[in-house]
Image (cartoon, rainbow, N blue to C red; front, side):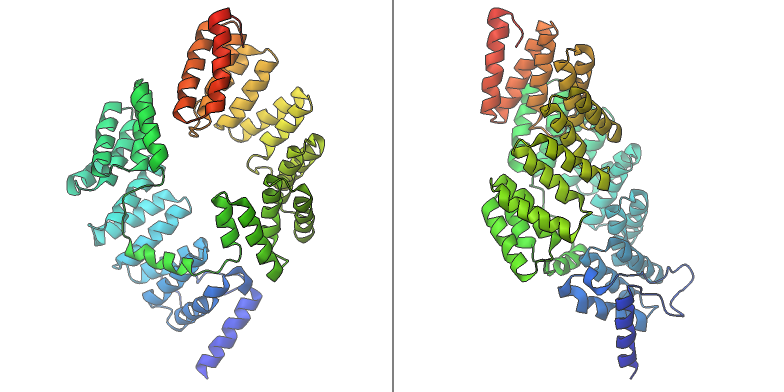
Length: 479
C-alpha cells in the first residue's frame, strides 16, 4: 500500500509541475529536493527512469546514492540546475565520495560557475589525486576564471606528475601565452604535439603564438595542421561522466536524425527526415523552424514559406522563425521585407545572434547607409568584441570615404578567432588603405590577405586580390 500511495503522489506532483521535498529530508545545509517541471519537459525514454530515481530519493531522503542517482538522470535529461541541487545533496550527505564531488564540479562548470567548479574539483582530487579528468577540468576552470598564476602553478604540477600526458603541456602553453611568455608557450605546446601529433587545440595554440612572434611561415603551417585536426584530442576515459552520457544517448529525439544530417551538410536528406518527423507530429515547432532555413538553402522558397507560416501559428514568439524567414527573404532580394523579419526577431529577443547585423545588411542593400551604420554600431554596443560587427561598420565607413574611422574598425576585425574570415578582413583593410592613399600599407595587407587565402584554399578570393594587386603594383591606382 505504501508503494501505491507513493506512485499516486508522484503522479500528482508531475501533473502540477512541482516536486517538493517531503518532511524530514533536509539535513543541516541540505537544499530542498529540486522543483521539477511537468512530464512533457523530460525525454520520454527517461521518464520512467526519472520517476524511479525520484521515488528512491523520496523513500531514502538521507541516502547519498539515491540523491546522486536522481542527479545523474536529471543531468542526462539536460536539466542541469536541478541536477546540481541533487548532486549538492549527495555530496553533503557523503562528503567522502569522489563521485558526487566530481559530478557537482562538472555541472558547476557547465553553468559557468567556474570558481565553484574549481572548488568542487579540488575536493574530488583530494579524495583521488590521480584521476586525470578531474585534474584537467580543474585547470580549465582556473583558465576560464582568469586565475592565470594559479593555473600556471597547477599545470606545472600536473606536468611534473604526468609527464606522459599531452593535455597538461597544452594547458601550460595556453597559460604562458596569456601571460606573454611566448617562447615558453611554444616549448610547452611543442611538447604536447610531440606526445600527441594530431592534437588540434595544441596546433591552434602554436599557430596563434607563432603569429604573435612574427613567424608567419610557422604560423601558417600550424594553422594548416589545426584545420586537419581541429576535432582531434587525446582520449581521456571518464567512467563517472560516461554514465551520464550513456543515459543521455538513450534519449529519443525525433528531430535528431534530421538535425545531424543538416550538420553534415546533407540538406535534402535532412529536410526529408524532418518532414518524416512531422508526419508523426505536426506540432514539432523546431522542425518547422529548421525547415524554413533548409528549404531556403535548397532554393525552394514556397515550401520554406509554408513552414514559416506553420511555425508562427504554433509559436508566434519564436525569434528563430523570423530570423530564418529574414534569411529566406534576403536570398530572394526582398530586402525591405527581410529587414522587417529581422526587426521582429529583435523585438522578441533583442540579443538574437546575427539579427542586428543582418538588419544592417538589409538597410545597406537598400542604399540606406545611415540606418545600416546605426544597426552595425548597435550590434557593437551589444558585443564590442564582435569582429564581424567591426568589419561591417568599418566597411560602410570606408565606402562613405571616412577612411581613418573605417580603418580603425577594420583593424579591430582582425582579432577574429574565425580563421576562415581573416583573409577577407585583411583584404578589406588593404583596399581601405589603398583607397585612402596609403599605398604601402595597402600592398602589405593585400599580400598578407593573399597568403592567408591561399593557405585556406580560398581560390576565388585569391583571384580577386591578385586583380587588385596588379592594379596597385603596375598602375599605382587604388582598387
